[in-house]
Amino acid sequence: MLPADLEKIREIVFHDLPAGQAERARELLDGLDSMQASTKVACCRTLVVQYKVTHYTLQGLEKALEAQGFHLDNSLLQKIRRALIYFCENVQRENLVINAPEVKSQQVFARVYEQHLHGDRDETPEEWREYK
Image (cartoon, rainbow, N blue to C red; front, side, top):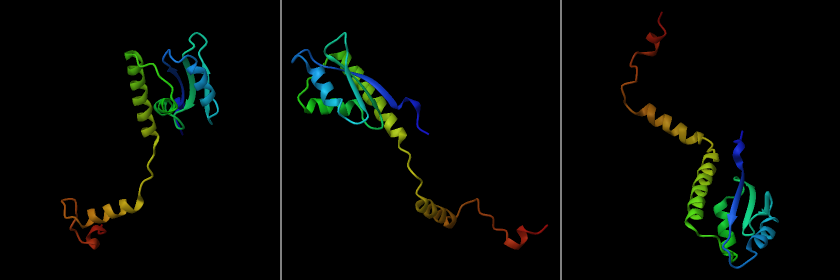
């Protein structure tokens, strides 16, 4: 069962210049699968994106936008906010990865443990263990 907080709603804040970046980014991102993007009504330079953290991360989205020539707001507050979100999403994605146990490696470890001399071995003969 997956955690309930996989759906993220994040804001991407663009620099003032050039004008209209948020709207152009909305058009670009809105076409992606499992992605919803809308511009914030009160602020023309903020884009609100909604996605599942299993599909996208804010860091990945922002890097892709920067690669396309968009300019993000790099004020100290935005940098701190981004760093915190990047960290949280990366940790959440790492925690979602469930490694299936490697049965063969466990069997090898068990054989090595059986061959290793240690204090937990009972030297009582098998026929005496069953004696009642």
